[in-house]
Image (cartoon, rainbow, N blue to C red; front, top):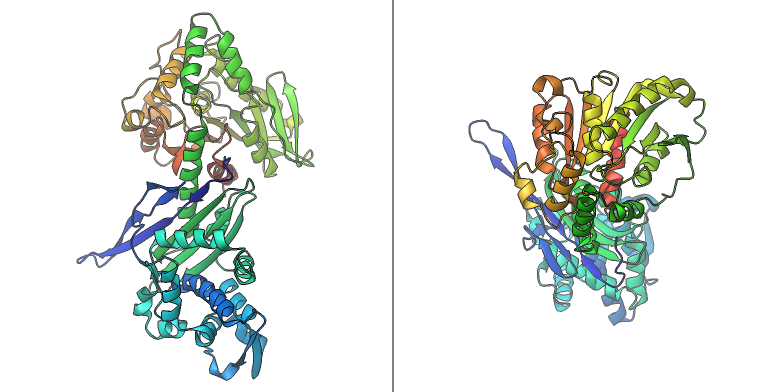
Amino acid sequence: MWKNKHSILFVLLTFFLDYIQATEAKSQSPYFSYGASIMNGDLCCGHQEDCAFSMHSVMKFPQALYVADYLNKKGLTLNDSVLVCKDSLDAETWSPMLSVFEGTRYFTFAELIEWSLKQSDNNACDLLFASCGLPNAVEKYIHSLGFKDIHVQLTEKEMKKSPHRSTENSSTPKEMVRLLEWFYLHRNDNKNLSFIWNIMANCSTGQQRIAAVLPKGGKWIHKTGSGFPSFDGRQDRNDVGIILLPDGSHLFIAVFLPKSKEENEVAEIAEHCLMRIQADEFLRNMPSDLQHKQTMAILKAIDGDNKELMAVRNSRNTQPKYSDNVETKMITPTMRLYEPKGSQDQYLPVLLYLHGGGWTFGSINSCGRFCDAMAASGEMRVIALDYRLAPEHPYPEGLNDCITAVNYIIDHATELRIDANHITIGGDSSGGNLALATALSETCRGKIESLLLFYPVTKAFDDGSESWQQYGKGFGLDAEIMNAFNRAYTINADKRCSAISVGLCSDEELNMLPRTLLIATERDILRDQGVALAERMRGKIQRIEYKGSVHLFITVPGQDTAFDRAVKDAIGFICNK
């Protein structure tokens, strides 16, 4: 993921929230419209990317760029200062700098820029306007750089006096990410721009916004903005900036969210944006003929020649890297235990995890990263099962292995330090199918507390659904290979048998299932199968769809944001938090 260190990944996202007054009900109904993502200079998807949104304190970013240029042209430095009288400042606005002095004192331009950008101080911002140039001077400078859709017309004092005029300080999302790109390219041109870069890298506002979903190891150089709260507590929330990733690649992102209810809504939008970007990059890096070759290997194995299929299995059987606080051991020849270090005296819930791979490949190693991450939470033990694979071992052999594993866990709960009242079965894709079938089996019925499913197979045939048609090629799981998976698993069985196509179970049978979390991918051939299952399991199931994501994020690296979110959601579900 993010392998091309020289490519610039542009990302922008606006989330336009409009409210339509219902005349009779006198209530407001939200209308949601997403913004756009631009990658490698190409618009991937877009709505509202050319619409103007109020910047609010995001305005302090283009102002700082103007001040940097002004100081250079006037022969001034960041250490030059301005005499400030505290009594002349607005005590009723957001201004942390007021707490650091009494009477009068000198503030350097460096201090004013830092207060303005890092803590969004409104008095510091207006002092820069008064000392270096009014809003029209800032706008003129920004326009001279080529960014005509960014407008700066009001000081903070003027916006406070006339909140309805805040739209006069506006930007389109597309123009803001272009300005962010300019800043990235010119950040080392002079000391003033480098100083601004360092200050924005330590911006202390908006920690629940994009910073909350920053990719692991990433750095966030940004500026936030917030509007005036309305009578019902809603306010505009913005966050714009540059994400630097460990491999040297970078993203420019702008989120404008008018009339937001909660602080974390910005994070959710940015997270979905990152999921789509990473999924698209993941798909681009996938060899175009990979799944066709895997399909041919499966079909040859069905005919008795499994040489090529064994090669596929070996490629998916790489030993994972384990966390420092997780210990592993084989408790049987086919079961690996993951447990938090130092937990030997604790009885913990257990997750029995069944890997994906279309019942034909995959292993306890292919799901190792996920199992390790779950155990690293310290909240549970995890057991991964190496069940027998088709076509050599078609239904019901793999399923029987899963049922046997549940009974083994129950019988050895004391020595494994497992709370047998808190057993969860989880799995991705075909593993999710096996998890459902295991919980429905007569042997295990009533013994399972919960189910954790990632994009599960619920019908082992072409279901003719919209998602099957729309995402049947090029989205991580092609219809061609899915049909081969289904054929391999059901060689000696009816693929519409309810123990195989669990989505065909009766309502009475589905009602016997324990509480369930189903995490789905938006662009997935199996999406609608999961939707249908969730509609029939209402009251017992929570279904979450990761927007923009594609199949495989649990077992194949490349969609890190979706993987990290899945771990978080899964831990919360199992621990019932």
